[in-house]
Length: 69
Image (cartoon, helix red, strand yellow):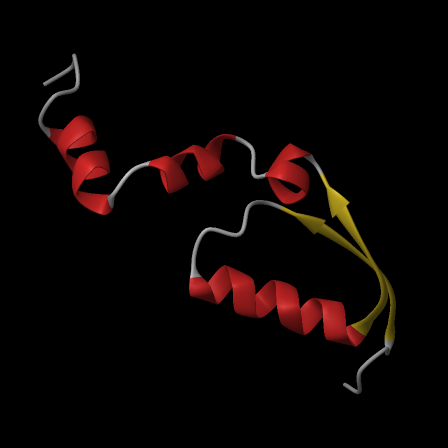
């Protein structure tokens, strides 16, 4: 479909990887108006907290140091 073909896109969810970024960029090009719907789409929400740590730190906390292991 050509750019600007969609009237309004409600974008929901965080952009955490290159695939999410590609989809958001593509939808923005195809839409006349794009609305960030929800905290994750607007300011990152809980998924954006992972941007504060390295991949190694996240895996260590989740699989090695968590209280349930």
